[in-house]
Amino acid sequence: MEIMIEADRISKNFGSVRALDSVSIAVARGTVLALLGHNGSGKTTLVNILTTVLPPSSGQASVAGYGVTKQPREVRKRIGLAGQFASVDGQLTGRGNLLLIARLLGADRQAARARADMLLELFGLQDIAARCAHTYSGGLRRRLDLAMSLVGHPEVIFLDEPTTGLDPSSRIGLWEIVESLVAEGTTILLTTQHLDEADRLADSIAVLSAGVVVASGTPAELKARAGQRTITVTLTTIEQTRAAKVTLAQAGLKPEMGRERNTVVLPMKTTEEIASVVTPLDLAGIEVHELTFGHPSLDDVYLAIATRPNNGQAAHMTGGPTVPPSAQRRGGSHERASQPGGPEPAGGPRRARPPAEMARQFRVHPGDGAHPAGSA
Ligand SMILES: Nc1ncnc2c1ncn2[C@@H]1O[C@H](COP(=O)(O)OP(=O)(O)OP(=O)(O)O)[C@@H](O)[C@H]1O
Ligand SMILES: [Mg+2]
Image (cartoon, rainbow, N blue to C red):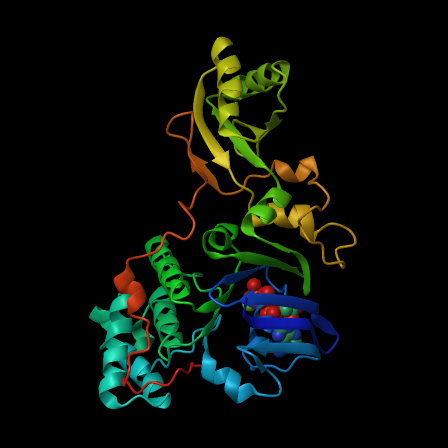
């Protein structure tokens, strides 16, 4: 297993602010690491250090086998970076931005045009390619920025909150692009505040809280640690809601009043348990308006892991302490049940690969003149 991104006890101080405190991560070739964390947790700082934008205060890091402080040029040749704040030049057109990067990376005119056209199409920007980028909406600018990070066929890509500001379909489009890149062997580190995004894309997740990795593991390990799934029962009136809570408690379940109006929330291990919720309510003549299934949200992760006392110790999830019940009942992302009996977790099958044609588009074309270099 070849490690393409490695941070070994990286710390970073900004004056008295300790933005990163002995952070260690490792990302194998052709895999995705999602760095999850709230505002100010240190995600961008780590990305900046790994992409040679900032020097660490202490610790070692390497990308594609090159030290970020000792061999920054070698690192930059191999990476693509889409930062949190788009580096698009507003005075140039969309196509102009892509051509500029391609030419800077050494592509000849024809190869640069071919690469720009391919990326414009991939990101759905063809129709506005001739417009100055300052006229683009935030989401379009974001897409152009992501396209720019791919111009040089980088081996390692850093995406800092890549889907922030994208509409739902663009978000899914980006996920598919990430999956196609990974299928090609590209290594990706992305930051996100959304557990569902990490769940869909990541092979491993590191949770940052106040500059410390407080948990790391696979998405499944993290979710198991963050809290179990829940069922939220929505009733029609407050009287029915109170009656439902009593009825479910009498049935031996552990209902709690939900945060939303007229809801009762119960922990759930498997979808088979739905009947044990619905049947007693039905027998008591209580009308269920809606059933929803909750997954742990990033808030749950934080409640369960990040805000625990003594979180200065990096806690690995496997075999760690169990989650306090108070953290299990918070609403995460929800999926609606059209019928009791069962949806599978949101996000569909993991790693559903997009068509091979899409994946193929990212190969380095012999003689296209573009060096395997990035836009960092
Ligand atoms: N150049 C800087 N000077 C001083 N403090 C900084 C600087 N850059 C970051 N910080 C501080 O370091 C901490 C981590 O910031 P960072 O931008 O890495 O967080 P983040 O996880 O990317 O947050 P967000 O989700 O808001 O993007 C914050 O407390 C921030 O205020
Ligand atoms: Mg950030």
